[in-house]
Image (cartoon, rainbow, N blue to C red):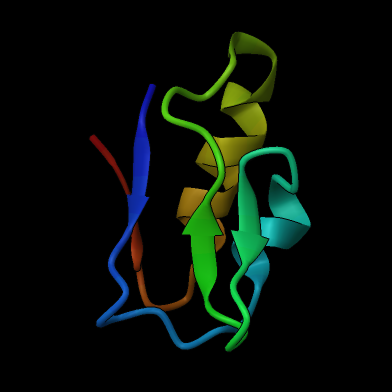
Length: 62
């Protein structure tokens, strides 16, 4: 599984990092960024929860 964050849509609420800190972080302006090229199998459930929790649907599975 791979995920991306649409920087033009992200509003910096941080849900991604709350649900999957091993996959997502916040940049110096507080917006989400992806830390890994491929989500590790043990983190897939957390990453999917982050995708579902994002209020602006800025996170996508690719």
